[in-house]
Image (spheres, rainbow, N blue to C red):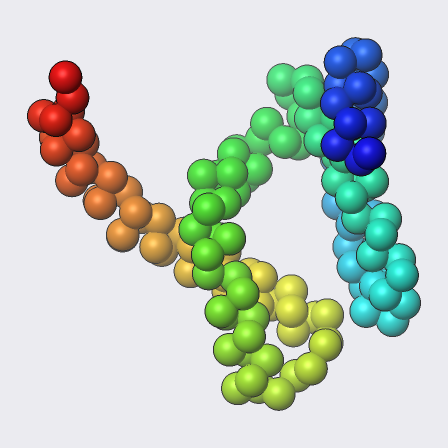
Length: 136
């Protein structure tokens, strides 16, 4: 139902212009509240949907350079964030402290950037001639 509703909102031309800091601040508040009250975590998909709809315009937060870079790192970030967060939890024995988890996310972004620059991009450059040579 959530995806269908989001699709219908998008197709209807629903226009939501919000201040850049509002969704970011609200996501942060919901994350901190979810540490104490887990039921508040259900708000995150709704805030994310509003955030995405606010990014439909060309000069918004989602089209900014930091968000574009985060989009380029997204797959590598997806691969590294869980192992880093679990390692931090086991080594530092921090439990569910949200501040430590945010530090873990920052470390994950740095690790994803390094892997993208030094592993993913060189490998992709190395595969280009092979892929072009095998094309019909």
